[in-house]
Length: 244
Image: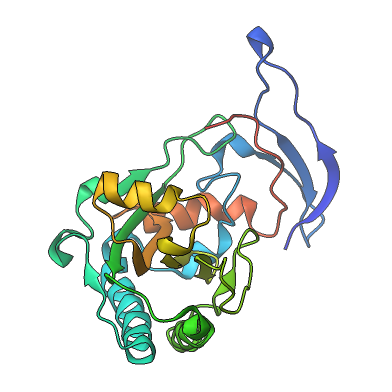
């Protein structure tokens, strides 16, 4: 593991744009190693090391389907409702659902790609007093398939069935993959906006919905990624120097 010995040696490029950070570190053998972060194969906002042992883009779908099946089955058992795909399951991992990360946040190229897919939704919801039990069942299932349990998002109020309770959102993740959870009853929205949106867009007024996402190494690039990551293992990522 490299020991950071110096600060970031970043300067400014032409036109005032920030150049990629350069870090100086000392290896266990005492060698000083200089690393140019424009060569980082992941992204400034992504921990690159976990991806060294993770399935790449081509290997991910089977794992993702297993995760979604486990969580959706738990929700259906607890809620008594059926979750149905919003697009055919055969299309979940089509190219249109993948979004390559062209930049690594330091002016270089990333080898990562992100998928958002696999949405399942009911057309009604149980009484809000049962929402906690549904979320707990989903959390247990998430843990069973290798994710952390669902955590309610900051803006979600645990209202325990009070009259103004109409929407909960939560996320379960392992740092690479995530599943989003939402349960809502728009008829309880005091602003009336949820009802108007449901009527305008043909959405269910009340529903439970889950969706899957992950950021992984692009197909066929895992060996290249492992090699490119070697200089960066054990180092702290500096702040991004580009916004993409």
